[in-house]
Amino acid sequence: MFKRATNKQNRRETWFSRVATGTDGAIHHAPFFLLLFVVFCAVLGLWFVLQRSATDELIETEEVVETLEYQGPRHALTGMPMEDEVRPAVFAVMVENPVDVRPQSGVNHAFLVFEAPVEGNITRWMALFGADVDLKEVGPVRSARPYYVDWALGWDALYAHVGGSPEALALIQSQDVFDLNEFYWGSTFWRAQRAEAPHNVFTESIRLLTAWEKIVTETVVYADRLFKENVAEENRPAAQTVRVRFGHAQYNVDWVYQPKTNDYLRTQIGIVSKMRDGSKLIANNIAVMFTDVEMIDDVGRKRIRTIGEGEATIVQDGVLITGTWKKENRKAMLRFYTEDGEEMQWNPGVTWIEVLPIGHTVEEL
Image 1 (cartoon, rainbow, N blue to C red):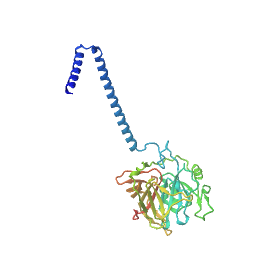
Image 2 (tube, one colour):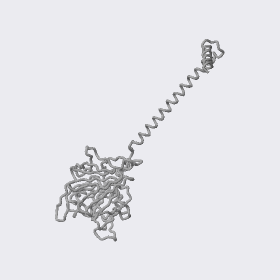
Image 3 (cartoon, rainbow, N blue to C red):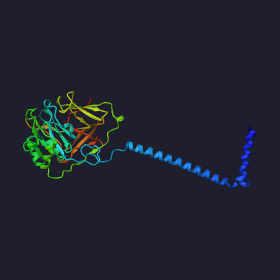
């Protein structure tokens, strides 16, 4: 075996020697084949390099796509991604919330809801709607309070209400609010036969739009909010319930986290909050602002500080975030900030702002 291998090796060496010295008949062809072989190896090596680079580039691109947040146009009110930016006018409608008038109508279509105490620690809502929403019925519509007027001013909203406290009506006049008072604009509202006054006043989007065209004679430009993407499902907690304590057992609110959809279901006294058509009240963000609240008359009306700043708790993505609220003046938008001073970014969808007196609590159950 060893001898055959040696002879074969010798034969290879003899052939290469003959080629090198020109004594073999293949002398005129060997350099060409050798050069062709070298070129082939070089091309093959280059192909492998290019394939590897293309694969690496594809992997890097896929990783960027997975982590890159949406940067395109959004709906200015909801933050939902859109083909083109949508920036509709805003309607702010006062809606009552006593236990004996529930269920209400239309509030599930709001992009933003303020909930604050009125007389007797009953809460009242101011629901904000975009003019692009088709509202068949919203209400019962009730009277104005000055703190709601301040919040509506931040959106240059058409403010729909039925009368109001003396302080609220004076503020509406002095601040040139786009005022839609049922006492003067009766055709914008109707009184339903199914309920007794004053709990029977309702309106709809087509009537609100008609009133807007008559009352608002200037271009309205409201400020922007910051939006982000929902946290990835695998990073969401399994469960969370947040209780907002208004100080009256029937008006305390529980927000129950739904990790699959990354939103919160509203409940009161153990009952899911629903509208008259059966729609549930859902929020993608809850912001709780703590502020000074004082009683100002024998009726029990309240003065709530809306200007300046104070402590806040933001609830989103299954966690509680400690922060602050700020509103520079009556016509500025109410804004929220994290502890490090960064402006809060909201999940697209619906936001509820719960207004509590200082000393009241928000807690996880």
